[in-house]
Length: 437
Image 1 (cartoon, rainbow, N blue to C red):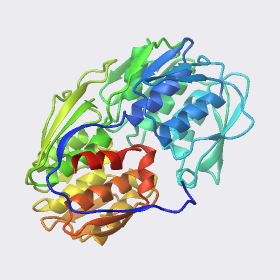
Image 2 (tube, rainbow, N blue to C red):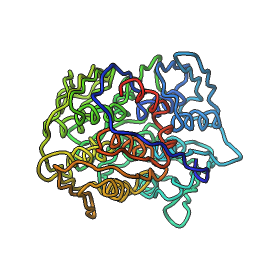
Image 3 (cartoon, rainbow, N blue to C red):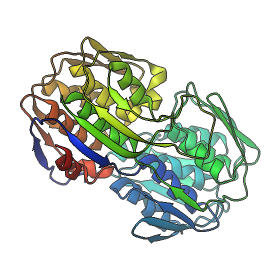
Image 4 (cartoon, helix red, strand yellow):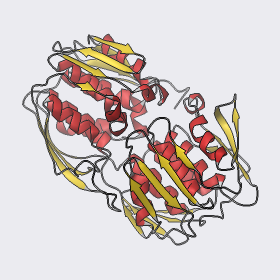
C-alpha cells in the first residue's frame, strides 16, 4: 500500500443507522490461530479465519517456513511443521504491515535448533516500529537477534538453545507477552511473564486449548517447555475492534439501532465497551465478567446498539491495554460528550501503524474537534461535535474508518484521504456502511 496513490472518499452526514451486521473475524485471534496451527504436528482447521491484508501476510509467512495451507470456502486448514522443524528461507520473511506477526513469529523462530537464521522485514510502516521490546527478553533467554540501527527492522533471528526466564514487562503488551510465551514452549525450564496490568489473553487461551500447561496468577503467566501442540479446530469470533466503529456510529447518530452478530467478548478485549458504557453508551450484550479465570474458549455475544447522550470520562493507564486499538473512537465519542474526556497512559499509540496520538488529534481537530495531544494521550473538550472537513488516514486502517464514522456523525461530511487502508483489517467496511446508512 505504501507508495501507491491514496484513495479519497467523502462520507456525508447520515440519518439513523438501522440494520444487522456481521463484522470481520477477529484479527488478533486469526494471527495466533495460524501461528499455533503451524507449530502443531497434526493438521488444524481454522473456521472463520480473517481474509484481510494483515492476516494474509501471516499465511504467506508460514508457507515460507514450511507450513502447507489449504484455503476452503469457510475454513483454512494448516498442516504445520511441528514445534522444532521450521524451514529455512533464502529471502526475508515479509510481514507486510502486521506488527502482530512481526512480534509473535520471532518467539517461535528463536528457539529452533541447528543455528538457522531468518530475516524479518515489512513495509515502510513496519520499518519504523521498534522491536527492542521483544529482542530484549529473547536475548535474555539466549537468543541471538541482529536489528537494524540497534532496534528496528529488518532484523535477523538466529535459532538457539533457549533457557526459561522470569520476565517483568515494563509496560503491558499482549504481543510482547505472546512472543515470550511462544519462546517459552521451546526453552528449558518454566518461563514466567508478568505485566503491570492485564493485557489480551488470546494466546494463553489458545495454548491452554492446545494442551499446554499454563497458569495465570493476576497479571502473571507461567508456561513450561512443551513437546507438541494438540489443536484440531479453532473457531474465530467476530472482531470487537471492528464492531467498535459501528458501536460508535450507532451511539452518536440519533435514532439509530444496530444489531451486531457473533462478536468476541473476551473480558481482556472489552475495555472499550466498559469505557463507552461509563460515558452513557447503550450497548446490550452478554459480556464475560471482568477478571474471569483463564479459559480455553472465546466467549461470543450479540451486541444491540442504540443512540444515547454522552458524558466525558477519564481513561487511566491501567485501562489502556484492554482498549488500546479502540482509543481513537473514545476520542471521537468525547467530541460529542458533555464535559472533558481525557486518555492517559497511552504512549503505545505512538508506536502503531502511525503515530495514532498525532493522527487522531490532527484528524479530529481538522474536523472541528476541540482536542489536544499530551505526551501519552489526548484531552477533548466535548459537546460541540464535529463540523466536518478532511481527514488524512496516514496509511492507518483505524484512522481511515474513524474518518468515515466521523463523517456520518458530522454536520457537513468528511473526506477521508487513504480509505484503502481499511483493507488491512476490514476489507468490506464501505460495503457494510452502505447496508446500514
